[in-house]
Image 1 (cartoon, rainbow, N blue to C red):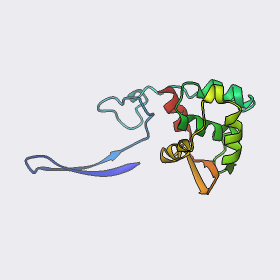
Image 2 (cartoon, rainbow, N blue to C red; image 1 turned 90 degrees about the horizontal axis):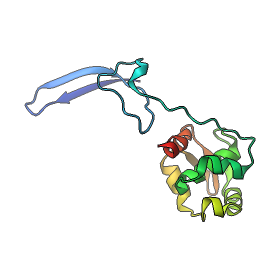
Image 3 (cartoon, one colour; image 1 turned 90 degrees about the vertical axis):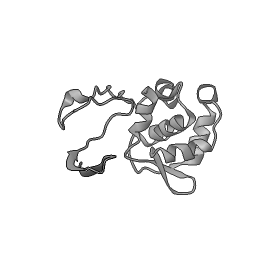
Image 4 (tube, helix red, strand yellow; image 1 turned 135 degrees about the vertical axis):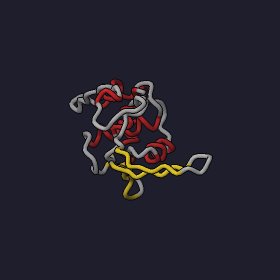
Length: 145
């Protein structure tokens, strides 16, 4: 993404220019003076491969253990949607499956749904129906970082 920047320092001098911005991986520092297209500017951790053929308990154990409730909620929605953005997942289905894994996930709290939505990992079209957004992989990055 190309942006135009205008800065004014304390003495009133104005600086302007165009800058190329690119998405970064959360928790990864970008090197000073990094140039667009410079692949050495940020070490990018490999995203874990998701195996949706695993049963839900094994999937949640592999990716959700030690995570916050909002991450676990997003991961369970992700599992039910098989990683596909825009697939409607009923909150009742999430709660039913969650309740079968309380020893692994802890107790379900409706606050997890709001927190995951605020982070942009899930969205809701109508009450009780959730879907993954295009930034759902942020839940994985947050899990690892």
